[in-house]
Length: 442
Image 1: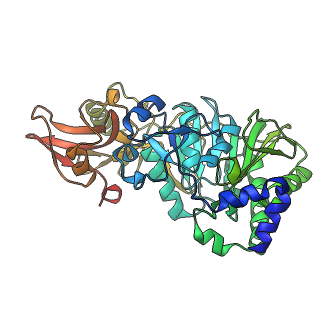
Image 2 (image 1 turned 90 degrees about the vertical axis):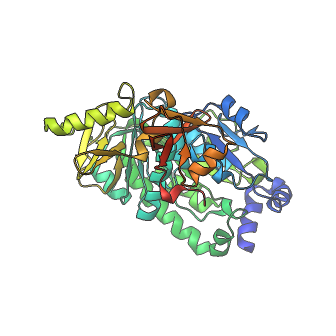
Image 3 (image 1 turned 90 degrees about the horizontal axis):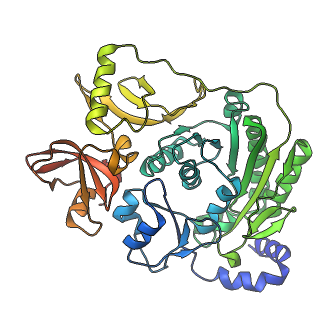
């Protein structure tokens, strides 16, 4: 680790002692409010501890170190917030996502940055989130589902495969590249024990390879943000300089953000003594046209009238005014509602497109957890709204049946403080629990 500390000293000689002081303290604890499901003011009102704004994101906050087990909080289950290291929100802030954008998150697991992008899209445009490792892609999907994202596609492919299939399709791309994780040392002893100089060199070669795939997916005049949670120049400045040398059509651009410390003109470095565990972000713009681009693709409409009738019946029995659109697709026995502006993703390894509405079982459609998580309370036909401190929500998240008003019948959304967290099936004053076993509090 002597090499690591000597490099930090060279990077911030005037603030090195300050860095060492912070390095010995507890890691920052942070969360980001998910504005797809909850407002900042509402979350502040509902939590019984104070939130302090971070400089990296308008909906990012520090929370007290003494707060433990926040991942089991009912509002976390409901997707009202995402537990996220504070400086990790900086990259998406620099990406400047706008409603209606098409956005690619190339290295997306576990999903913090993807769900931050989704909140900024606000249900408009399209988010494609890719994670090459299948097990991590499933974790990514779980978080996208929990946060109520309607307009996403989750893939598990090598970046080169994405480049081959989705050339010139995206307005904005995030490459939060796999790195040596020097900014995680206070939180993750494993990252610290695995660190070596050679590992940083290996990471840098892989990061440049990913960038050289991502560049093909970007439209002319599109924006690409490269980020890592590490400090050394090999994985940061040197990767960017090498990429620009090989791709002079890309230029570093001012993000207009005040946080962190400038490097390479407008890129940003964040150290522990800047309020986060550590991040590097650089915003690039593609200034030239690349021949060939991918256009939106319309998937085949379901022609079977009986099947379409079944889909419409279950959809309308669960939700008001078909809130996810009507771009239905059947894959096997499962019914999906695809987002608009989908590209042709045939040939890619797709984990999930859009929302899983339900699965056909014995001439009926069993609704899915995914569909309810994407809904707001006003979208739902039946709703049981529980207090975050109630015994009923504890029992529900534990997988137990709970009592409900006897007038409620059939599939029913379950909300906590007005934020949908799942569903059940009501009959005779009892709600049969449909909360997925893998998500329950034990």
